[in-house]
Length: 144
Image 1: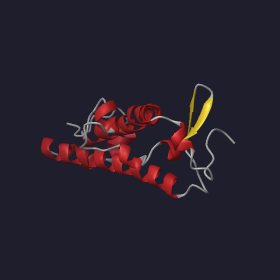
Image 2: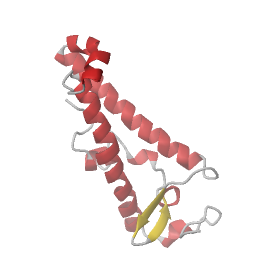
Image 3: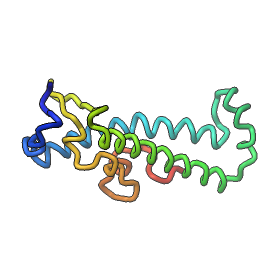
């Protein structure tokens, strides 16, 4: 059953705040660098009409006429949409504990992130200095 059991809420007390933050940041670093930044880089290349993918160039031909200001607006919209999607996924996991869990492994132990983090979705914190995007993104909140 692992270290955490949803029916026993004492597991939060088993970890110090520092341990909980370390585990939460471990998840955030992977999510932001791999999923968010990766998706955003691909989308930015398309929005700026710089992708080597000829199918995307054809599909998004109308983007080739965008001004730099319009490209920046599209890229920032994409940045916000990707962050909102990650937030929604975490909120969905937290709000449906009987249907899904997000498990992280560290040193051979399993941790349910809904039990480790007080609010996983809020960890993204786009405008906070200590949010995942500010801590881990190589792109940052505003993309151009």
